[in-house]
Structure formats: structure tokens, C-alpha cells
Length: 220
Image 1 (cartoon, rainbow, N blue to C red):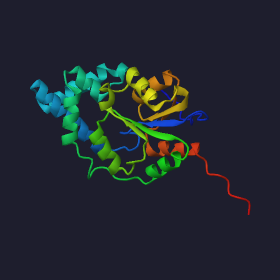
Image 2: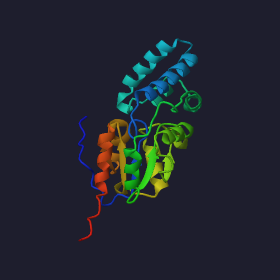
Image 3: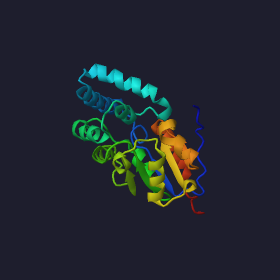
Image 4: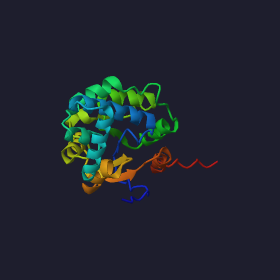
């Protein structure tokens, strides 16, 4: 689906809700660690090889495309328990030494924080999310952080989304969602009346800085 990359109208927006993985950073090696851990989890559950588990997960993600095709939903469909999966991810996935700081991203967040409340909403767990945010230099820049552990319902989920809006005390019109996957991060918020912005790369993400233009220089 083609999604416009125009900047949203933010006259009424008070909170910006960011996805984490793939949005505030992009790193293939990190994604591979998460996928491999998930494959080992399903391999142990099903009594099959890691390679066969990878095929099972891939097939489920394709089958569940209309529901976002996320890794979490695929694992659930294969009989996996999300709490057990995320315990494994917290133990076995190591962002340290993989992720680095792109100084443009924390600078962008500092700029946006002058005008908006900044929020994280991720399918990741609290422990791994915190370690990721530390490694990419954005820790302690968010007023609220919502993870899979808040609702145990992976994106996209209407109940979780409404719970987030309620937790923020915001109406949809007062909220902007930013993510790298339209069907997973943005489609449902947009349907509820939220503003959305698709950012698949850091360069696209940085366009949000235009929402906070520099004040004019005083007359000399």
C-alpha cells in the first residue's frame, strides 16, 4: 500500500507515539538475532530443527499478512507463549555491540520534546527495549513507554491501542503515531482518527523536525 510521506497536520497533536525497532533505528544484525532466538524457541517447542522452525514462522507470517504478519502473531499461531518467548529474547538477544548511536536521532527527539509529549509503543519487552534505547542514545527521552508486557496483545490490536490513548489521556486527534510498517504500526491508529507518519529510514524520520521550525532570529 502506498502511503503519503507528507508531514501530518499537528495543530492539535499533543503526543507523538513512536515505534522502536525499525523506526528509531534500522539494523539487520539486530533483526537477525531476534529472528534466530524466535526460531530456536519454536524449534524447541515443536521438536524440529531451527531451519524448519524458520520455515514454519515464515509461512505463518505470510498467512497472517492481513493481521500485520508480525513475528509475535506467528509465534502465537504456532502454539508459542508470548511471555515465554520474551523471556528468551531478554536472555539471548544482545543489542550491546550491535547497535550504535546516530546523534541525529536523539537531537531530533530533544527538538520534538519542546512541543510534544514523546511516547514509545513497541512489540518488544521492557528489558530488551530499555537496552536498545540505551544503545541508540535515546533512553530517558520518553514520558511513557508501552511494551508487549502492558497488554500481551501484539500490534495491531484495537484494545491495546485504545488502552494507550486512555493511558495518555489523549483523543485520537491529539496523537501522532510514527512507525516503519503501515499495516502494523499505523493502519489501525489512522482508522481511529489519529495522525500517522511512515518512516522507513532515519532520513525520513528526521523530517519530523520540520514540525518544530526554528524561531526567527531577532532583528539586528
